[in-house]
Length: 491
Image 1: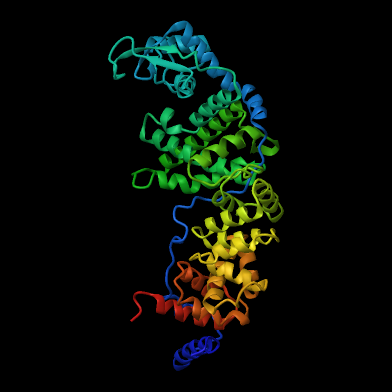
Image 2: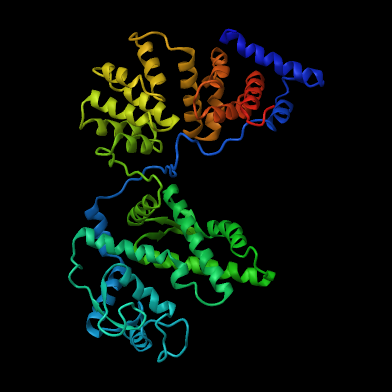
């Protein structure tokens, strides 16, 4: 059977099935309801294992400008003050916590109010007010613990002396210490999570709420109504935090109140870091320093968080991954800067080699970028035409420019699968649905049955997208039937 007749044959099969039971095949709602139960479920794309969330690119000041802002941070100044205090007093520690005698001296010298006791002459080293100042200095490496008394495993008293040799005033050192204090502020459970069950739930939930708020501020890159955002997040996170706990409605309300107060307190601390600033009407936004801190933090946790102007020396794989979050104009500006350090032929080889082991969107993106290099690239594209996943794109590219034979129907189907998957991940869902009729037009319907036969890992996802979202009922019918046949449970 020719490919142009295969689509019609499949469509006729669906029509016969439905007409026997009195259903109208052109009724999209009924068609999807009847076929949906047997369509193939799709999980993570096997073509893109372990891929992190791709975030929009951000613009950051230079490191020397960031360091200038960090030096103005009140929290960084406190860290240096704690270091100087340790040099003078040489406090005794139990593990990494100040002894009670030194903790009492600490609150007096820094004029802070302990939280665990009203008696300023009997302060414990694990008092949250003490930990908030002391522990960031340890985390930043401003204080070195030397085991000069007690046990070497740190379980007994040990003496701490300031680590003066590494505290220089270079920009890198200042930013490293600032970030250590910034990260510590975000870890509620460590220095606020002691006490009753209610307190533990409250502070652990506050840590999650704060992380979600900062992520939203990073992606939004503009003012955010903090009270409204916290209230919205509390509804979900508090319920998760107390799941399985026997709590009265009053106790749950106390968790919400404590969590809200803890988040507000943390935002105040972050303002002292110079990471967050408050605008009008209770809105908050990240400062450039806070944006940098979040960029590093998100990158460290596996997200793809590009910085504008930073891809010129990146690998081709990193370039393709990061460009997904850029707008069209920014994307081309970053690419032109990247290709400036290599010949066009070398740039094409690197791009296509990387794209052959990446996802559908990366392959489509690679060919779009290749189109910007008009001369001296044909031989590099011919070399890549033997690739398993990028090869069909290369052969289609060569044929369209008169440098090769017409692509096979299998190659065309392969490219169509990549284009549908790429379009579904680039832009909003509304934009994808609006452009789907043009992306998969009647002239390409014959490729849908062919796509179901090729060894492409994203075929099930493409069939699902067309089945659920394409406006033409004939596409819905055929993709639903093909999905049933691909199902391992199909008899």
